Image 1 (cartoon, rainbow, N blue to C red):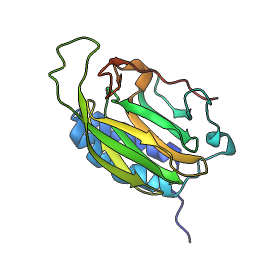
Image 2 (cartoon, rainbow, N blue to C red):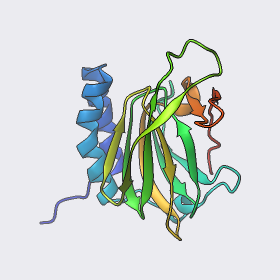
Image 3 (cartoon, helix red, strand yellow):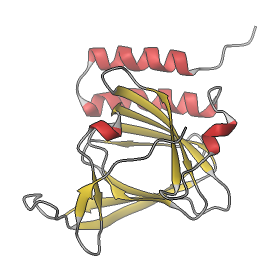
Image 4 (spheres, one colour):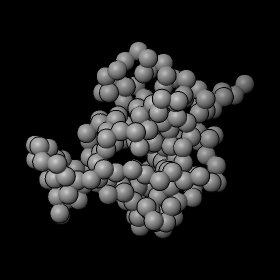
Length: 188
């Protein structure tokens, strides 16, 4: 008898169990991390349309699940070759797992105190390439950028405590030190 692969329905049930029992973002991402890994390495949910990207923003954001109150949002993220997302935070806890291909995550640290509206000084704090089954976690104010340095579309699983377009999240420009709100265009 073979075991049933981990699927999106069970993943959502497990997410709800975790978030009902804890409101601490650090605890939540620690508990969600292995589950996101399991779903990423058994992508029963992955469809050909999840490889589609928005040419303007450089990636595709395919909503797989969202609770009615915009919590527990799960996306398939597709990254065009040579493209990605600029430095940004999520405004909520986040867990991202590699599914297909590789993506480079650059981690940034904010050096100003956040008191000036529209201004943010950030410096590069590290970099790591993530591939299938690799998982990275973020607290609400963690800052990272993403690039697909390969010649094929890369796909990753993104899990958020709140749909990112319903949080106060920021995009940062390390050269101009400008911070502005950051929304994504969902790909159908």
